Length: 88
Image (cartoon, rainbow, N blue to C red; front, side, top):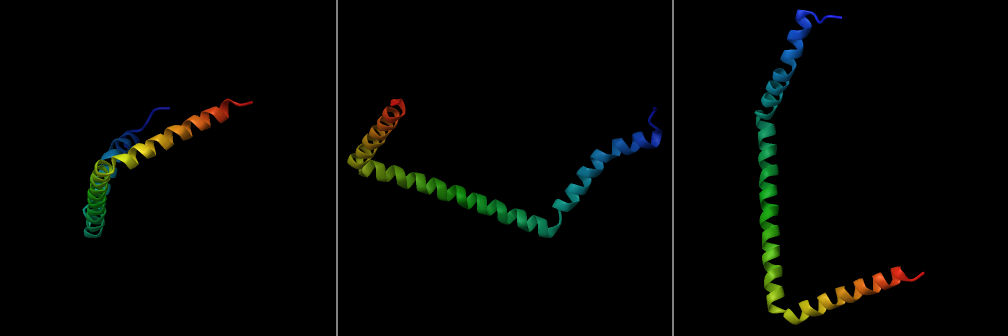
C-alpha cells in the first residue's frame, strides 16, 4: 500500500515538531529555574567530593602507620576469604 502525500508530510514534521515542543517547554521560567537549581546542586556535590578526597589524602599522609595497618588487614581478609572458598 502506498503512503499518501499527507501521511508522508506528517511523518516528516513529527521530529522537528517534537524538538520545537521540548525547546518551548525548556524555555519556560519555572523549568529554567528548576534546571538552574539542579545544576547548582550538582556543582556543589562535585565540590564537596573534591574536598572530601583532598581531606582523605591529607589524612593518609599524616597517618601512614594507620594506612599501612588498614592495608594489611584488607590483605589478610582477602587471604582468609580465598582460603575459605577453597575448602570443600
